[in-house]
Image (cartoon, rainbow, N blue to C red; front, side, top):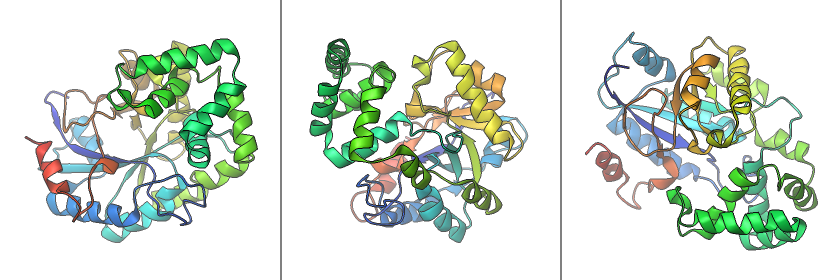
Length: 319
């Protein structure tokens, strides 16, 4: 990529309404479908929405992007994307890039999704209280110290935000040490993980239908770790697992989205070796200096039409 990439990329996760088929009584909130519809209308009016093959061709020097190009991305491979997103994109003649986890059938629920369910069911304070009671003293001390450090640490979303500092500590510092206790709480308050995963994530038949309907898929790891916190072997496994899964769907090279937006100096090379030509972060930017550091705007941060100037926010990113 000789010149900086000019591309507006919008990122989504849960897109659901309370009580709908995607929410299934979990209590996990998401972007309401009416807000998503309004954002699609706004984006289609102000941008040229391009699909992943168009972006890939540009990155490979094979074609130019149109002015004010925009790409829609969706993380984690959630059932929301089939039930609520796919029909809306297809009805508008649009395509999305879906970063799904390379999960074999029957695999356990990744840690961040366990936390989504438990916090929705118990609330963050009660969940923390019950988790701390189940941890050994050393792990409990580590949790307290790291949570305090993240309140003033490197991640803007956790600064001054105790619930987010607590969550990022579990996801980064204690992903292994706290896993048994989190698993026990999940079984006690939510139920068997397999029952949950079967209704939370996309099924193979749904993926095939989305591909046939003009959607595209990218990699997002297998277990959703912070890749900058993973050792070299784990990083290689996560990249290769995603690439192997994608190779069964479509020809490469592929796109990747860093789980939690976490990456370091090792990650681009590891992804390139596995067959990826681009990687997307969570940095809010529309000018990108590297194909492996493409920033995205979070759709949940944009106010819906009529409840704030979402158009202004988008325009401001180009200033």
